[in-house]
Length: 138
Ligand SMILES: CC(C)(COP(=O)(O)OP(=O)(O)OC[C@H]1O[C@@H](n2cnc3c(N)ncnc32)[C@H](O)[C@@H]1OP(=O)(O)O)[C@@H](O)C(=O)NCCC(=O)NCCSC(=O)c1ccc(O)cc1
Image (cartoon, rainbow, N blue to C red; front, top):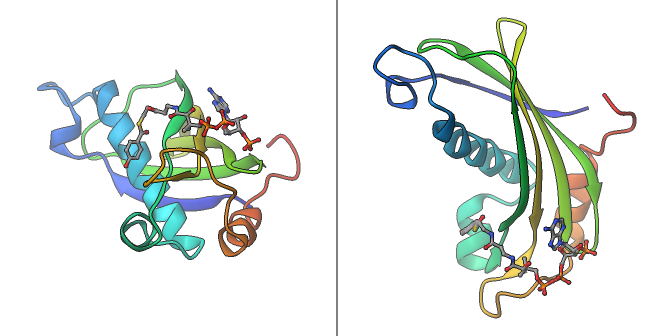
């Protein structure tokens, strides 16, 4: 079962003709990741501010299939492909009105914001993240 959320494509995400401009998708994707961590019991502010855990991106592969337009409602499905000691491999599928717009393979690593080195996912986060583990190649 993926993590799901929605968000409109806003004026500021688009070029003057109303087509979503691809760099906007990076910020949109990070917003989805922030919601995802909130849903597994780690609101971003607490993760970064109190727990001092960073989640830098180490790999990102974006595929664009269909343009998005100002006013579209984006439907996000985020799958956990694999969770390692400190790494997390994610798959995003983003659609509007049932049409796939883009997909992404995204890997992040849990790090200490004090040492900037990887750290093992704490048990509570691991348990929350594992709820979204993909069981087949959906
Ligand atoms: C993340 C790192 C600190 C990890 O380095 P180390 O502490 O030496 O650990 P390791 O090399 O042993 O790797 C740790 C794990 O990462 C995995 N790893 C490392 N690199 C990769 C790549 N490229 N792909 C996939 N997996 C990787 C590795 O397989 C290990 O997995 P586990 O077995 O599950 O633990 C280091 O690779 C690094 O600093 N990389 C650069 C990250 C970066 O600058 N990204 C650019 C974007 S910044 C960003 O996204 C950001 C997010 C949030 C913010 O507040 C600020 C910035």
